[in-house]
Image (tube, rainbow, N blue to C red):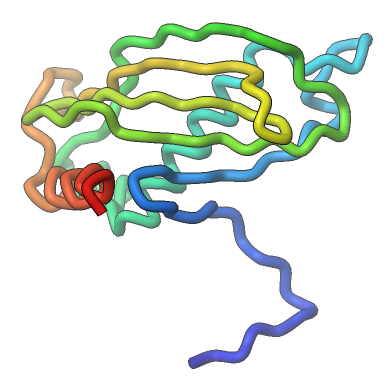
Length: 155
């Protein structure tokens, strides 16, 4: 085992907690408007980063799929609900769960929380598409990884 170097920062990625992925963000000045409240579009960025890092933790290589011409994931539906504002310097945790897995798509639910309090939530559908933009089946390994992630609910 490699001993961690205390002078090297941890890379982002979050942690898997059963059927949930938890990803931490902090509200920086650049995330806010003049009143110190998080600009609404930044939640979409945080949710996207959390989903991307979930894929990495599941050993799903998006870049390889794109570079090989196999395809890419694309957001096809999104429903956001803003509940409370995140403010400058808040520590926020994005919780991601997979609620439904199909041959070509996946439905997910994400919640941004500050100290357990829900700030914003999103229900979404992500579809696998060819590089020409047509829906196609997700790679078998991707489906298997998501199925394993979802099955953690039973444990």
